[in-house]
Image 1 (cartoon, rainbow, N blue to C red):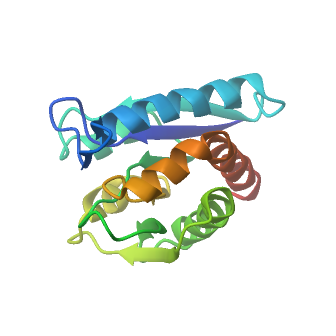
Image 2 (cartoon, rainbow, N blue to C red):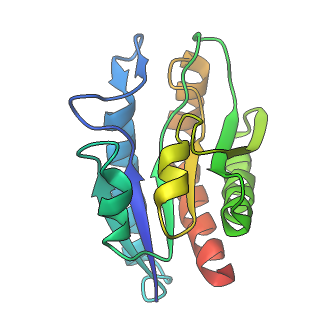
Length: 182
């Protein structure tokens, strides 16, 4: 059985990006999404193949150790992009030298694009100095950061909500595929 750590990006006191129109914070969105994914993973036919473990951030610098202490086979950190309320699209980040991280990012990106149909912003290799790179670099298991849509873009958020069932399925299918390939 493969152990996957699902990291809910940000924390209640520092909730990340925000959608003003729908009064929705990135942390709140992903906290509920991760719960739905865990339910699907533990109830589905794949329940005996993968063990999902949810991790919340206390401090950013302490997050890699907190994850490493769980001894996972792989890690997905859940986020939503934000920029200027106009930019749109899907991207997945991985540590630039991690072959397994890149493979995982490609698998997840494929499933997210199919579920949401947003612009393909690609899989992006990051260094430790880049935003998000610290987590990608200092976790022992391969780690990716999912940015499926821009939460500050009303159209992207509505797309994600209209296609929520497909989004949950995209994550669970990607997790199943990754677990089978690592």
